Image (tube, rainbow, N blue to C red; front, side, top):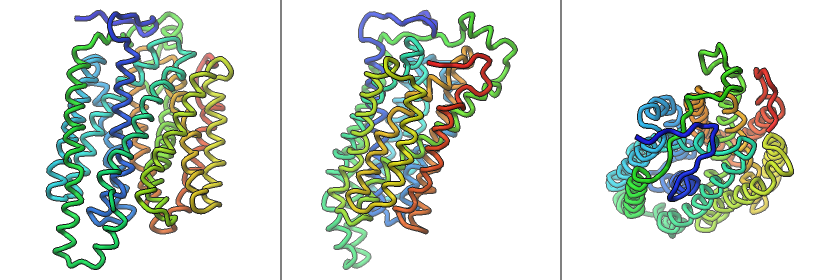
Length: 430
């Protein structure tokens, strides 16, 4: 058995650098996650759904983080980081497999089951990989490392909707017009053919996930010991018996919940929102890529500027205020200009996630794995808030529904100003 490396020590290992292996995992996270932006309008057509029903795509995918995060921490205690990551990839492959019968019988509930299983695998992967990259080096540069991972994630995410959209949404606008004049039998045949378009892409995704899982299990990725604390952290944690005794972490969980909610809203609603503004679906397919491109630009800013020019918490404050400004601007404008401001939310979101993890996990020591699992539970914001958006899109309109993002960004700003230091004996500045 490999000897675990202390979380406070720099990791040195021969072979492929650990950061490159984790980068490949984040690429996979991004590709699978941002396929949802195409699946929402695609399944809305294929399974004849309204806005609320179509956003059950994000609910099924992200609610698994809430359900599976704590079990993921238990699994990682048994398997360790490396085997846990390989297992997560295997579970994701099983979720991709479920898409095949779902497409064959055009059953929306089965699609949702496949998404839930994929999210379960990702919950395990996220619980392992996010703290891993956070504690892989000095804490003051953690946001920089997570920004590098973010680029891997969002490059994949920018590719995914273009690739799946080219297959699943090809001639979708014409199809929506044609089926209005068809009989029920003709419409069923046409929609069955539409549903079948995702079978080959998901077979390929399944094969890639299985292959990567095998490679991870055989890699030189070292274990990191999060049970052993350095003297400073051990002293600060004297008498601590529960993760609930770290209020800065609990506020971090709430921040993750709201952040992931607005990130998913920005990326996964923009295609449908563009269509509601009178833009053709085949054009709107590219809008998620614009959102993710904005995130990539923001990550590059983080890589070059943190901590040299400004701190992680400063970046979080400024970018949260940008989120408020861009959201209001999107609501007050129309057409391509409004869509552009939704895309710019990608830039505003970019340096929030990299900052939350080191700020929230700081000082947890032996509580790191369970703390990480709680943060992963916060990813369930991606299940709840887009569903709320979908409800308001039906009852108000898709543009006015974006008002729900404003209080979310204001809470993120509060965490960067004060929340990350609540309950800490020694105030933190990294």
